[in-house]
Image 1: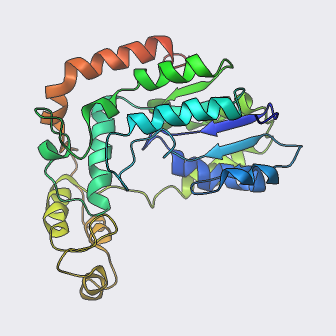
Image 2: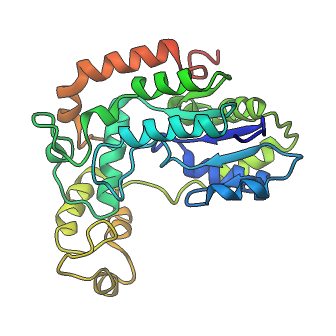
Image 3: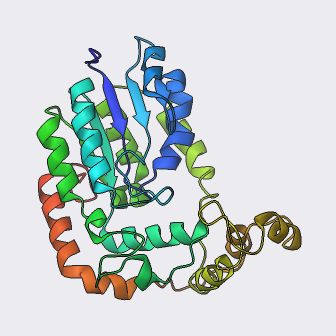
Length: 288
């Protein structure tokens, strides 16, 4: 068992500003006190006694796009069970977002890394045989397990608050960790100005990207007929994602997964209502 009583795990979910927080705030502040993705757990020994240890990796509990062989929930539950034996005093930081946005972002992330399924095959609501399983979209089972194993207080935030008022969220986050940052405003200003590289593609461009992905190799699907390097040569150094990101976006945003969400709305709305009531402790409503 790890005796350190200041361990925090920032564990996702996907598309809830995880990368933004890692690159722009956690790395400058924590330095070697930050453990990011793919870092071995024995690096816990590097921790400075003056700072809490922060492990930030959305793949711990998030819905991973890469290296998928089965439903992720078993891995999520196993991690929580095993980590509770190592560091039962760990406190978790988790971002959640409403399911309509969550599904859309997951699907666009899948297209960005080379996916070529249509939305209705990406999440197969009839046979549950899609790239993502329906049960992986539900927050409550994971949060119930987490709260049953780890008795200390956790920070569960609604991503909508980050979009509308990031200062409030980040102030709450660092208060939760126990850091008093007098230069937080300056740090936030620099961070927000640098937050442009992870933009998505437009509705029509995303549909075209899916077709191109059928032919161009990618880390997700390396055996396509056109090597990625050849595509980049022909597209003046751009990957398929970068090429379509550079095209103008529609003024009115449309969802690629709207019909998919509507088919699952009842189940997903129940899940959101449950976690919003019982688990989320920082949101637009609760910060007022």
